[in-house]
Length: 382
Image 1 (tube, rainbow, N blue to C red):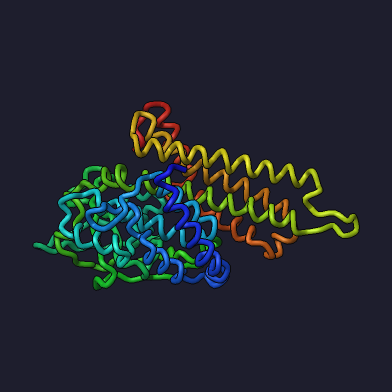
Image 2: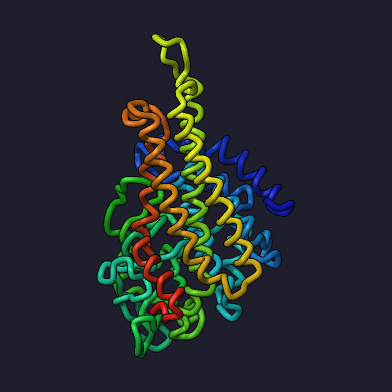
C-alpha cells in the first residue's frame, strides 16, 4: 500500500466494518440489494474515486481502486461487485472526451448522485460479451436498441447502463458501439429475478431493451468504436477489480478460520482447535495463497498505472489467478471449519459461495486461459 492509498484504505476499512459487515449476512440470506452500503459509499465519496478532479472526483489510480475493492469484498462481496461494475462504467464514460453527456454524468458520479453499470453480455452470445447479437437501428436522430441482456449487475437499481450493441454496418463480431441508457428510458425493463448461489445482493438480473430509443448524443464515441474502448478503458479495470474481489473474499475466509480456531475448544482434551498442527498448517497454506495473490494484484495495478509490454498479459492473468486462488482458499477453509462452516455458523460458508462467481463471470476462467495462451504465442486474441 502506498501513501496515497492509505487515506482511502482507512476510510474504506472503517465504512466496511461499520456498515457493510453489519448488513452482509442479511443481504446474502435475503438476496437483497445492499442499499445501506451503497448509500454509505456514495456519501463518503467512493462513487467518484476514479473520476477526474475536474468533476469533483478523487482521480485515484489503479492501486487505490484495487485496495478499496479488496477491502469492500472482504466484508460484503455483493457490495464490492456493484461498486466494481459502477467504476467500469465510469471509466467508459470518462474515456471519451467528446461524449456529450460526459460532463453532467461525471459531475453527478463525482458527488455520489449517480450509480452506473455495464450491460454487455447477451442471451444469444452468453458470456462472449465481445460478440453482441443485437444491432442498433438508426432512425433519424434516434438510435433504437433492442437486446436481451443477461447478468446485468444492479439491474433496475443503477441510474444508467452502458450498453454495447453491434454497429451500423458490422464486418466482424467485435464491431460494436456503446450507448449510455438512463434507467427511466421507455422500453428498458428487468425481465427476471436474481437468485444466485453467491454474491446474492448484486441484482445481476436479465434486462430487455425493447426498441429503446436514445438520441445520438447518448452514443459513447463513434459508431464502431465500442470494442477498442472496452479493451482499453473497461476490461483492465474489470479484470483488476475482479481479482481484488477474489482476494478480499479469500482474505475474509482466512480471518474467519483463524477466529474459529482460536475460539473453539476440544473440551475433552482441554485444548483449542488452534492446538491441532494439521489445522494450523491449513491456515498457513491459506495465508500464503492470499499473500501471493495480493502481491500479484499490486504488481498488476502498478503495470496499469505505468503501462508497458507486460501489462496486457498481467491484466489477463489477474482475474483467473485470483479467482482460482479464492476457490482453493475457501474450499480449504470449509474443510478446516468442518461442521461449523457446513452448518452456516461461520461466514466462511458465504465466502465459499461468493468465490464461485468469478470463474463463471465473463470473461470466464476458461476463456481467459485461452486468451493468455494466445497472448503467449503471439496470436491475436479474437
